[in-house]
Image (cartoon, rainbow, N blue to C red; front, side, top):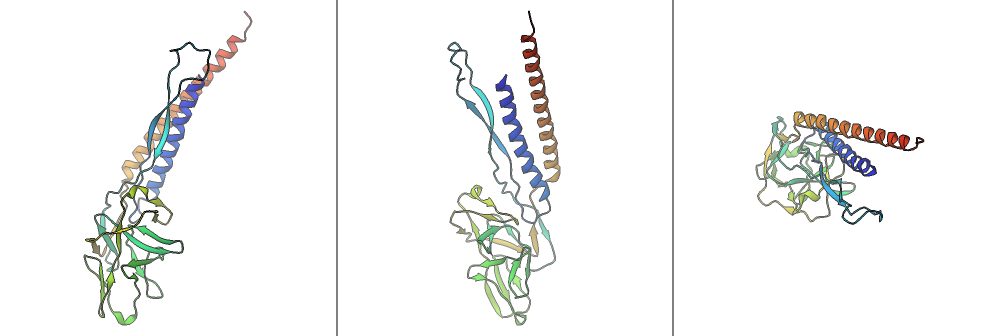
Length: 246
């Protein structure tokens, strides 16, 4: 009977983790360039019972539920026109590179602007990196344009090209807040990167799908809780009856 409670508890733990993942996806449904995560679990079989009073062959392997991880869904989000020539969206694979106080970070958020120092930064104020470093402009540079290959130009000529990178194992990317990723992998340049100026990539979260899944997870959690309650009640009843005088 203890096994029933332990198995149910392992399932509840996995469901709670999945609910957290879904809630984070829903919360970022309107975050530019956000990539949803998917909660996965697997079966874990415990060894045979440790009680040596059982006859050989009576033991059975017990299957628990184990959180397997939360892989990234790297499918592209909808490209939405903004009317801002500085906004840019990546078509296909790759990530923009931004410089933060903690070092280089990676993002699909291409909502850009110029700060007070004339630097090209994202919506969180981090400097967007080009192949030759950060971009900085003056009032004499005139209108800024971004070509399909990421080349950034002004009236005074070309100022460089956006740095777009990829990774051998994108599933190893770790979220570090502000819709940014970090990794210990070596960033590889996307040699034929394609971008669209005047657009931003929206989140790839589908709110209706996520909310439907949230309802399913909540029902499953309640069902497991009900099973645990009935099992506990059965145990209490059994103990009470065994303690009654014959």
